[in-house]
Image (cartoon, rainbow, N blue to C red; front, side, top):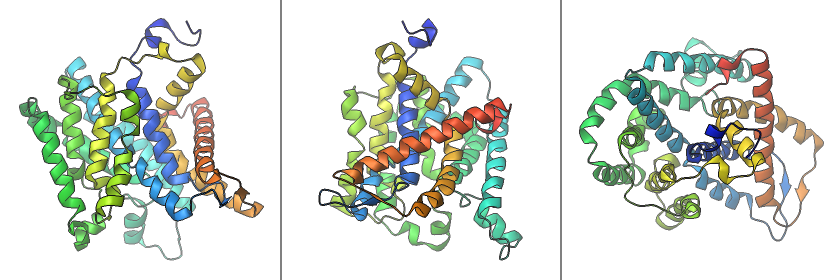
Length: 344
């Protein structure tokens, strides 16, 4: 028995925490995989190929939306009351604070007016990840209505999954996002995330999965995203809308029915998983800032690393380093009694 955790925590199902870690790692990878400069060797992939490979991590936000809906509904089932106002407040504080930080850091105040300041910095385009808050604000405000409608659909999860695949296929293989206002709004409207929300709510009541996958198979399922892009060439206005992203997300969240506990892992892995899983909001807010600060410093060094396989290895190391910096900053912020700015 690890001395780091009480007995009840060790026996807790760790699947949700592992999914959070996998998803936040993917978020940081998308943003910061090129942080450490690499010179390609004979045995390395080109930067274009690495950019293509990065698409595999697009399941990250859908996984978070599903887990958010799932745990929100679990909370309502347990307490008997909707806490949407409280959740808006907890989300609004970090949104305003970090958006202000990025606004002050990135804003070109010589050219900004009130209109451009709002549209460029406060409605989802201000920094990498801000759009996630915009999506969640909409879903939280509409959660009561969506929840009531979803309760009539508890026995139709399979149909909802099939309809969702068709929904995302229509979006990805049509010129939908080429329509002016639709393209400008991009994937920020809540409607694109309703399938994950509805299925998360249903799964809180009953298991929506009629299958049980080996953990390894579920974890490699995002490879389907690369297969779809390479084989079917969708109109890639936004990769989050791909049917394969939806399918791989469903396969990943099916791990919630697994029996993994913290007792299955060494203490250092359990500690790392728990720390990262409890810091996902802070990492989401901080990782673009860490990248913005560190990237110019590395460029001043004017040196890139070269070695066989470095094109694959360095992005992973970059991601781990960014995560470590974020965790360190989060600990400092909490020491300063400002945990509301980074707490899940």
